[in-house]
Structure formats: C-alpha cells, structure tokens
Image (cartoon, rainbow, N blue to C red; front, side, top):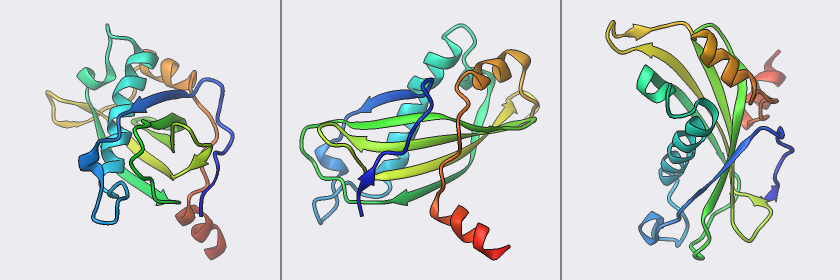
Length: 159
C-alpha cells in the first residue's frame, strides 16, 4: 500500500533516474529487478556529490555486499523519473549501509524502500579494507536514521 515518504536527513541526496518503457513488466509496472538499477544509478551520482570526483570511492574500491528492498506499491510508466533519495544509515570499520526511498515525480507516494550494505575493498589485494579517514568523514556528513524495513520489524519481534 502506498504511503508518504518517511522523513529523511537534510543531507540526503535525491537523484532523478529515468523510468524507461523497457523497465515495465507484463502488468505495466516497473519490474522488480529494475529497482536495483535505479538504486545503483542513484548511488553513483550521490557518491560523486558526497566524495567528489578527485577521490571517488568507486575508483578506490567498494562492493555491494547486500541489498534488501520492500516493494510498497507498483510504479507505472508516466514519463516522470524515479526519484531516489539516499543517505548513509550505518558506518562500521570496513562497511556502511545506504538507505533509499524510491518515489516518482508528480507524486508523494513511496513505491519502495531499500537498504544496501557496501564494503570498502582493496582492488589490488582483492580483500576488504578499512574505511579511509577521508571516506569516513564524507560518509558521516550524510549519516541519518536507518529505515525500518519489513525484515527489521520481524527481527525485532523475534527477541
């Protein structure tokens, strides 16, 4: 069921991602696998904003270790871009989580919420590495609250 977008930190980035006709499934909705593409596209542009072009975290090495998506409502094609708002929701020694809210231009509805865990990676040594000080400092500027995804609610009830 669609619901209004949750509150997001003021430092969050919002990236417009084109919704293509070919993103649709047989039911006329954005296919679920396309959401991962939207998240990736938004993340690339947000990293440029957060880290700059001189020291790109993408070039220094980062891998997606986990992605989780709650699909809340079917998004349809209407010539409006997907609006992906993202921020960091957790930082550790060698990894961090990115929270995403996916809306579409012309509506306040949230179509999906997601979270990805990214691991900083030493490309030469082919192993995880600790976050560099400049990376941690940049990520801390976009730190906000984590989203409460469905699996998080289920885990909370197990304890």
